[in-house]
Image (cartoon, rainbow, N blue to C red; front, side, top):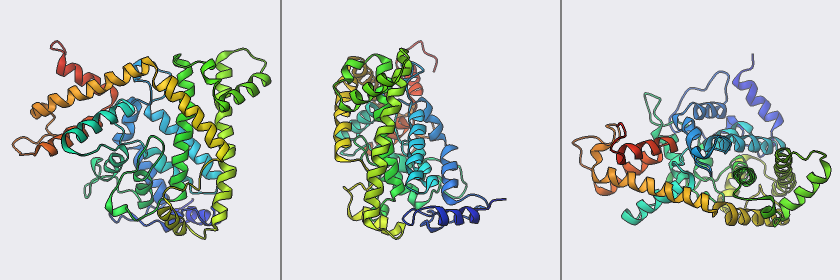
Length: 393
């Protein structure tokens, strides 16, 4: 039988010297006995998968709200794709796949319903009224350190420090770092940076797929992109089939592989140039150089990705159907919030403790956190209950 110690020996043998080894983890917030057969990061991954917040991702928006159709990515399927891509990158770079998977599976736990529209709505409510912000990375941190309640002696999932830092400092074009004083002076691992780049790779590629399927963008639109047009020509010339679905799938697959090939070549070169001896040196380097990504693309690939991303922003994210969904989502969240704020006794008992005095600011925080924990489906149903006199409450 393989034990935890056997896995840790394999990590020493097979992982790069700068990879984050399980036995070298800075540990958990609360001390716990080690497990007989699982490393600390394997346990973290399992705790995340079994969490309530992870299950809720199935009914949270990526781009298209769930009632638009069954084909489109949800926040859960996006998360699974990120984890798969991130593990592939990590394996090639000889990094710790278990740590990568744990961070990847948790990176969007704090997302509210309706994707970035929901986040924008909650952020505006908090900033306009109480000069505070809503940041889904910070909320992901709060989910795993406080909101998830499964253990008798502490709140949260009691994850390893490296996973928490990876969640809190997750950063892409759509994700801003959260700030917690306790972790401010701790740098992320290379494994955390792998999740950052896998996230942006995944959503760029699958948004193309979902956009084409929805009809909000066309192949003609995408031909303005160097990355897409190059992939389109190579695939069309190589395939005998005229099946549009197969062609689309093969092009998206080619896009992912082209980005991955460039990423691995550049990242391996960047990392080796630093001559790291261990993971502590990586953390220190990343803390001192927050804007520099050792795991990244060549200048040419970055420019082509930005070109395609800007095209999606113009043609897909600003398409009238998507804008209608976005604005409707914001209205729903604002209206639910206002009803709760005007009379918080309509909130569940576990959210609003009767007979207890709360400041308006604290009331806003509690309501926004409650809304952020909703799925799209629950928020839509709650809105009906609050505004439709014939809807059963």
